[in-house]
Amino acid sequence: MASGESGSWWSRPCGGREVLRLSVPLVTSMAALTVMTFMDRMFLLWHSEQSVAAVLPAGMLHFSLICFPLGLASYVNTFVAQYHGAGQEHRIGPAAWQGARVGLYCIPLYLLLIPAAPWVFRLAGHGPGLAAEETLFFQVCTFGAGAEIMAAAFSAVFTGIGATPVVMVVDSTAALLNGVLDYGWIFGHFGLPELGIEGAGWATVTALWFRVVAYAALTLLPRYRRKYGLWEDRRFNGPLFGRLLRFGVPNGVQLLIDVAGFTLFLLIVGQLGSENAAATSLAFNVNALAFVPMLGLGLALSTMVGRQLGRNRPDLASRATWTSLWIAGGYMGAMALVYLLLPDVLLMGHALRSRPAEFAQLRATTVVLLRFVAAYCLFDSMNVVFSGALKGAGDTRFIMLVSLLLTPLPLLAAIVGIRYWGGGLLWCWTVMTIWVLTMAFIYAGRFLQGQWRHIRVIEPELLAG
Image (cartoon, rainbow, N blue to C red; front, side):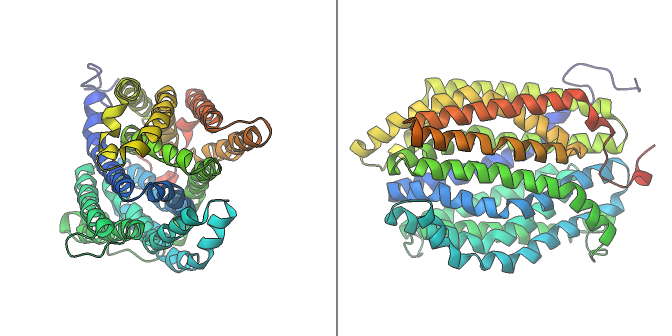
């Protein structure tokens, strides 16, 4: 063991202190974005129950369609982390620009999807009023698709080098901007027109482009620009782009399959009626308060694993993973108790300006669904941690194959259960819970097998000795 690598769980390298130092700003950033989404849904519930039922399936469909390029561009983080660990900082800027190009190329493609939106939501079998609001929200969000992809590539620079407070400040500011504009555009305050669900979409688009501008401006600062080659070498790099495709494409495919599967699940639930769709939307909105911040921990872990593998230290990468699992499990376990014991505290904001008689039934259904959330959230923490570690190493093909093989099964089970066995909302949520649990044990098994220890995404000749 190298000097200085002993110590307590807290103080040793890749121990609790180091994991939290890197992850807390990212968790804060994710929490800010989660609160933004939470407030968005709450404002829309105040505006109309139909609006809150529409925003989640429409938003998830939009996100599904950007998942592939987003997963590709965001995988720049692993390249940055491994280059940083190997002491090859001059390669970071070129890697970031290959990812940003993905977003630029996608902008015109997504704008072409706008005319198809009405047909998609009619095909889902939703009622005319719900489908109209889903269509409107989706069409507006399309104008921010390219921005979300570009921001992911630029933010990966700061995440990968460990400058996570920068990400926290930019994303928290964007979340604050979005929240203010949400309130203004949904209800017609601050001199803005009252646009309802359309206003929520424009607030999101504005915040996304703010992130792009903020990150691009930060890359111009001398302490980043010169050391990491962020503007001097922004031309297309064929070999580097090829490596990004090799490891990033499976990451993008996996993200696409998982989110598309989740979106199809929402569309299936939507066939059970507006009330069931609204309760499901509300339960996921509350669950996001626990789950989405954990994505910040998963991103921080991917960075730590990538950095240690760039240094040829898989032992420390493994330690970081187990440390992160303890932290994630403790947090999610506490949140599970809140879901079970204090659900009304989490639903309080949604009830404030809702009609009491209408909200009472919605609340009763949502409380039942939160029991499912409490049951599977610990396994969600396993998914976040072990998949984050595997991605940080470059084991993206395995994760992609698991998604390809596993995701269709619960969707088929939900459809068959509804159509032939008389299953309803609780059947759908039972299937989803089993899905989450199965994925958790598969990722854990893959990590324990250890193949990830020998994978590297950067050029072998650049690895640290």
